[in-house]
Image (tube, rainbow, N blue to C red; front, side, top):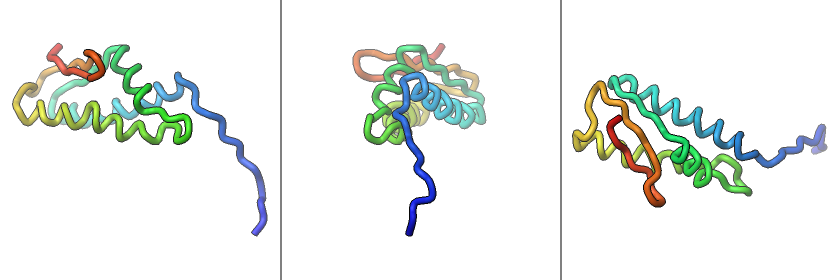
Length: 104
C-alpha cells in the first residue's frame, strides 16, 4: 500500500455547523409539509441545536442525533397527542436548556 495524496480536513466553523443544521431542519420541514404543517426555529433554537450537535472531535456527526433527540422525538409525541394539526405553523424556541414547541 502507498499513500497517493494527503487530504487535510480543517475543523468546521460555527457558521458551517449552523448551515448543516439548517439543511437538516429543512429536510424535517419537508416531511411536515406533507402533513400541511410548517416548522420554524427561532435564532436561539438554531444556536442551541448547533451547539449541542457539534463535537470538536467528530465535527457535525452528532448533529443528526441532536436533531432526533431535541426536535423529532418531542415533536412526534406532540403530534401524536394532537397538540398540532394540519395547517399549523410550529415554532421551536429555547426555554431553559430545552426546545419548546408552540403554535405560531
